[in-house]
Image (cartoon, rainbow, N blue to C red):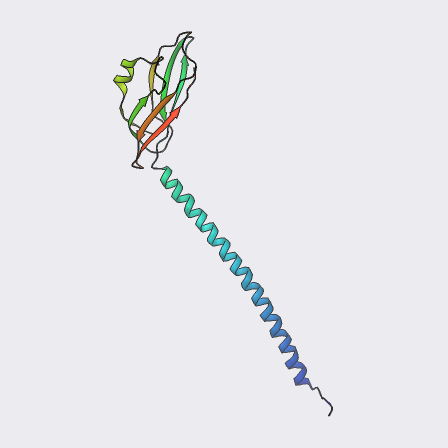
Length: 157
């Protein structure tokens, strides 16, 4: 029995091949679409984490201290807030002792009620040739994050 192929059979075969090709391309497209959705989800999660981190940083103060030289032999200890939030109840402590600042100056200014962003306070320093060049200072404050923060700095003359 001979097999006869007519025009309808050829068209049906081409339609079958075309539909197989369309199914293959659709599955490839769906894979790429899924990959794109996954990467977009990762980017959205990273952006959300970044926003949450920035929101947390907006509630934090960052206090620092350094000695500044005025003229040829006058020094001041400058304590400033470089964080975005207001620092409150700022206290200063000297774990290794204080031999450079006047205690009356410290008692007069500390505990400091508040220190806004980029605001600073200066303390007069008594520097002699026998004064240590490196000092350990512990700064303690609270901010909008709701916790006491302690930071040890090592300003040098």
